Image (tube, rainbow over all chains, first blue to last red; front, top):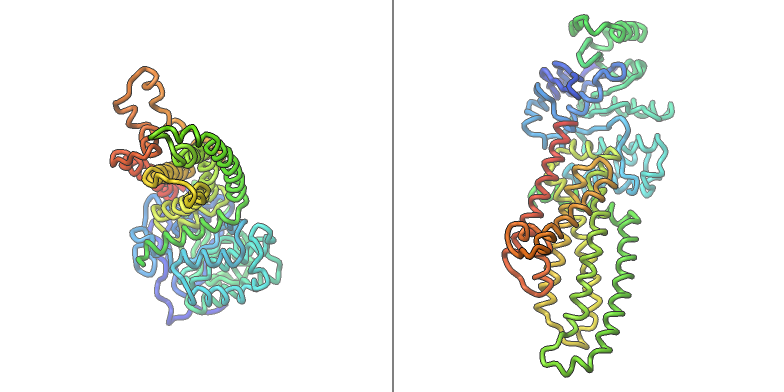
Length: 256
Length: 256
């Protein structure tokens, strides 16, 4: 595991007592955590644990009912426009416009993020190269394979070089080679100082790419620790199952 | 250009591009232009056939009264169907294909998203109006035009299209499915046009109910009469509809 770069250890993201209800039911409750620049946090949890809701709130698509989000020290809820340049988000199923080409997607995302002219063109070419999409630039998103759609979604999230990258199941529908390439890409982003939150169902994904792991269960944070603190994959798996099988009446485990 | 204008322009460009690459806009344009061109030919034939009788009348109706303005009147009738079909996907489509949260997560304020999408549709509609106006204008060298009346009728049509587009975008903001948005926009537009029908049948020609009806403000413009009361009515309805759409979109961020 790549050690956290101490030079870039400033706090990129701070969640304070974040809560969100849906249909009168708590989906996320009093979630607090910090993420440093250059750190990769794996967010684990069973279906319905509150992972996607948490990521939507961090990405700015959903407003929390209570609590606070600070992005590089600034109040994100007060200034949602911070998301424009500072956050890159890949939702669970990369949402694309089927009638637009790969190039048109990147141009549209770039313009919405404030890129234009030569800067936009350079950023577009760089990300097309990096994600191996050069041969698909004129292809309509509607005819891309699931893996290609996922790579395009990732390209849109990375285009404006965000300082916080929010990825919801980025390895969905990718073949093993592409999964390895995405892992390398995430580590490269972290090495460049980007803070990354990665939501996944796959424990191997977490052990392969994350510095830290947080486990959500029934909307509350039940575990937050360094991946290296869990001796191996089996230890993480054991802890995950303990939490996943935990009765909701039991108090949350103390965060590491 | 300010950041707000740049972002609104980015949304407009994206929406405009999507309109142009989807077959619906082209099919609507082709069918309506063909229908109106055929009607234009018929009206022109009637005009030419009756020219000798009208020559005896000192203040008889001219080309503008008998061909150009009736053609615009037919366009107004078609607009009730065409505009809801064009606007139905503006926001309801984005909600359906999952691109709505992505748009909200770019930090672009809801007002700029709504305005950007509205301007794209309005641009298409004004182009449509210009193409239809080009039919009578091709004969400007061969006949006498009442330029004032034609300008007032064109302004009336442009305002009517702008109002229908704003109502359509508002319906699209509230609907979960584009077809529901189109149906709602059609019914609301027809209702707004003829809300005073009962009052007129009862012989009431003034009052609030007549002021509320779109026909009360559109018909004087088609007759060549421009008044600030009518212009204000259109401005108020457009603003009200766009504010409603903005509030609904902002609520998406709150409600999820």
